Structure formats: C-alpha cells, structure tokens
Image (cartoon, rainbow, N blue to C red; front, top):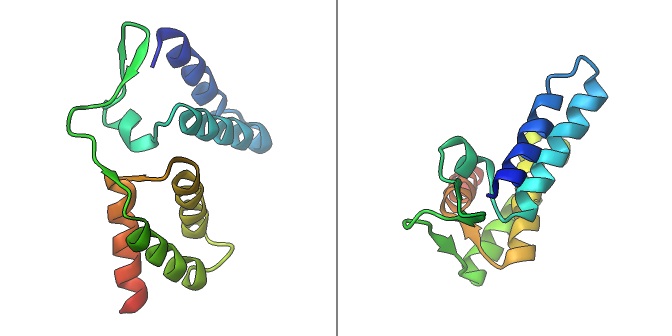
Length: 123
C-alpha cells in the first residue's frame, strides 16, 4: 500500500467513529470497497500483512490463494442456500463470493471460514 493509499485508508477509518450512524456506516463500506479495490482484506491489514514498501503493495511470502473452482463453487452453493439472507454472516458470504467472482481465487482465511461454515451447515 502506498503512503498516500494508507493515509486515505486512515481517514476513512477515522470517519467510522462519527456519531452519525449513516456517516459511520458509509465510511466503513467505503473502507471495505477500498480494500477490495486494492485486492486486500481486513485480516491482512489488522495482522500487519500489508506493508508500505517503495510505493507498491506487497503480499507476504506465505500468501496462499485457493482457486479450485469445483470445490469453492460447491461451498458457495451450500452456503448461499443455507445462510439466512439478512444475517451478518450472509453479508460476509456475499462479500467473499463477490471477491471470488472478481478475482478467481479466495484467500486462505476466506477459504477456511467458508469450509468451517459448510461443515456447520452439514452438521
């Protein structure tokens, strides 16, 4: 993440502390969209896996992509049928599904979360 991108991200996050619920929610959604646009996620930011290096965004050496379409599509088929539409977890599933559709892979953390959810759905 460039220093400029990082500063913009900080400003968005500071706006999430607003007393105005709508303003805080809009800022959080913009921060989510901003991360997605840079091909990043919250885990990477919060665990310090996104670094500011020479003006470009770097991924850690141990970054894992999961791109087995048959496996991942099967998990989404189950979750999109079983997770209630208006739940916060459904919002997560929808966001990861959008990430999958856009990039053709999911991160290791996303994959593990999907896998756990499918295991719970089958139990």
